[in-house]
Image (cartoon, rainbow, N blue to C red; front, side):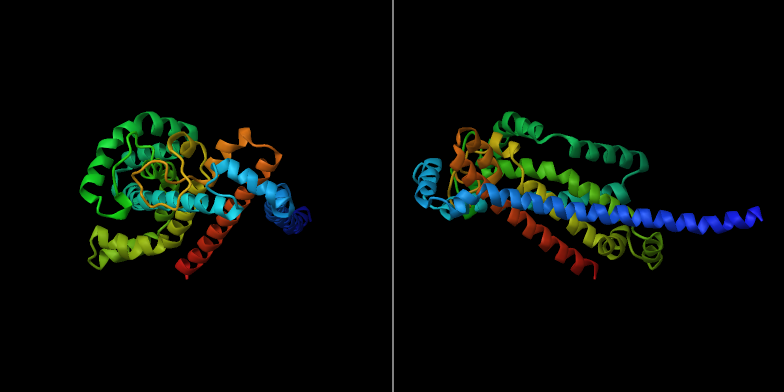
Length: 317
């Protein structure tokens, strides 16, 4: 009788545990939506004086921020948005192939002890604060990379992207892109490595059994399996680059132009770094203008994540 009562109680307790877990998971999902909505409402509320307030006062504030270069909000935020997207896209372009290569080396080529050590190093790089990267970039990379940028401007200056003369010190978009690439590299590498390690062993062995080389096995079995995960990792790294503040603020010589001259100083600026630079001296209306630019960055990040979701679904289809 006692054994029958125990077996009867087990399914009941299991069902209760399932209900509790479902409720907790549901609550966590709702909490994410609530937090996202709260952030959006906060930004909209604080930026409302910019939207519905005295437009002449807004124009004067923006003119004060830009030294008379812009007087409208879109004339102000447009170059900032362009600089944000340009620097983030360059950082992703630099880091993507390196990250995937490191992930493949760790997961399929390196000896076990070396792979373990490299995994620890990659995870450690992901935990370093951005201000440390900013100090390294400003104190070490900026003076060290000038000879290379000067060589690029000398021999590739006929390409508009590399038009010279190269700035010295190299507080330019190109240098900041390199620093951001180093920052997002461990994120993309770590996620890609974990995805590649989950490739079904039978698929890899089947490719090898059919006569494929190690690289052909990776190309035919590993990369197709991890494609959606690599896309997700890349978009996560791009989101980190879009919102980076301190490293950009500490390295980049700011400008307010629609410029693609990567090796010249005072050409571009990002939204996040501009907020950090202007906020200490801004009045109440100036803070509203800056929060308005933050609202634009929030929307751009949301759009990027939406596109990433679509790309991931397409890659996994």
